[in-house]
Amino acid sequence: MGRDTLIKIREQEMLVIASQNSQRLVSRTVGTGNDLVLLHGWGMNSGAFSSFIPFLSSHFRVTTIDLPGFGENATVLPARYDLASLTAMIAAHLPAHAIIAGWSLGGLVAQSLALEETELRGVVTLASSPKFVAGPGWPGIDPALLDEFKSQLKDDYQKTIDRFLAIQAMGSDSARHDIKRIRQQITDYPAPAEAALHGGLGILGDADMRERIGRIQRPSLRIYGRRDTLVPSSGIDRICELHPQSDTVVLPHASHAPFMSHPQQTANIILNFAASLDQKTLA
Image (cartoon, rainbow, N blue to C red; front, side, top):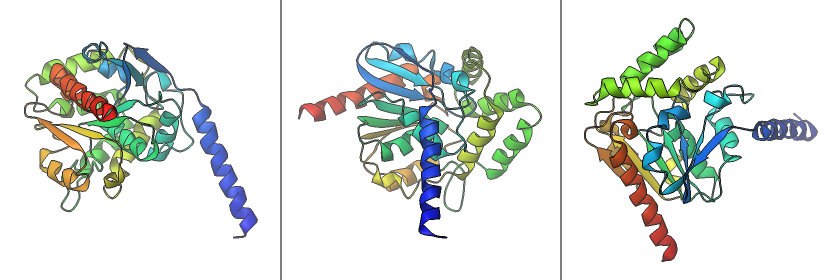
């Protein structure tokens, strides 16, 4: 392949990325203070944070951005639905010097942004991992379970979402209440695009950031639930070894949605993290 051909291919790739970034994503902002951006998980939308935001909005200017293909951005899709595309599209809409907090799949995007965006004040992951699928010596989601979700999506996406919600809340003392409330909150938003549902599962199945997270220079906080079955607590020590610079907090009675089952406690942890960033800035 000649040099001119390579240049043309690269130019076409740059045009695709520029086109993706120019697609305007819908976001919502409430509150006052330093900027905090919340990114939701697979199959969800920003409605998942509706009951959590009041615990934050008196301290932060909270912005929620639906991931491409979900919620109010259901019609905004990249040409290729992968982690790099989501990262580029979200990056184009971030407030300057924000803390980015990502839940589950949103946590993968947050970690990717932390590697790319030097202006971020900090990064928080909520029940997230650099690699979600189990493998040799790595606890995680059974690959067969993701295959089941992919198969079920073809027949009944709502049933698939309901099952995923049930798994996320499993182990929480308030599981039934959490499932009911989060279902109500996300139904206030448009249904997700089929391409985003399939693409998101593909990211959860394929993404492996284990060799990269140690290079994250932004201050980092990782929040886990001890009873989480999707990001098992048995893998937390492994993540700490890969990213020793990050702070880690494990909520003993939470599962995969700690901000739903323990909103005040989760908010306080994020507030303390933000306060530590302010102290470093003053120093």
